[in-house]
Amino acid sequence: MSRAVVLALVGVLVVGGCGGDDGGPSAAPAEGCHKAEAGTVAIVAADLAWDTDCLEAPAGRPVTIVVDNRDEGVNHNIHLRDAPGKPKTQLEAGPVTQSLEVDLPAGSYEYICDIHPNMLGTLRVTAVQG
Image (cartoon, rainbow, N blue to C red; front, side, top):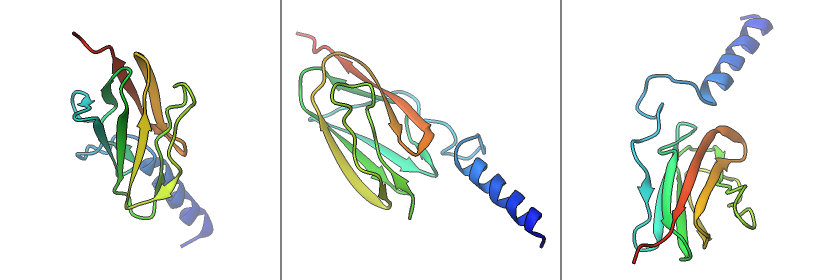
């Protein structure tokens, strides 16, 4: 195989692995938000995608975001880059589970994997009723 063909194949694999719709089960985020229960909300990184593009947590209460990185040998993290203090986990190769504790005011905060910009979503922090 020529060098040009090998480079073209590598390019296709890299671009295809960083997003795009392959029609598989992980190609689109799950329906609805993952809501915090008992102070914890979970998100899964698999096949270079989050399993949801929406997390929801109560305002003014500590919440632990649990990141289940199922991509073997692939670095992921979660970064709330527009939240106060810009909280994030460290990049770490999977499979691994990480935790990020936050206590945020009401609002919407973008989360992202720092090295996979297609892995993007919103943490909705809502005021507690009652």
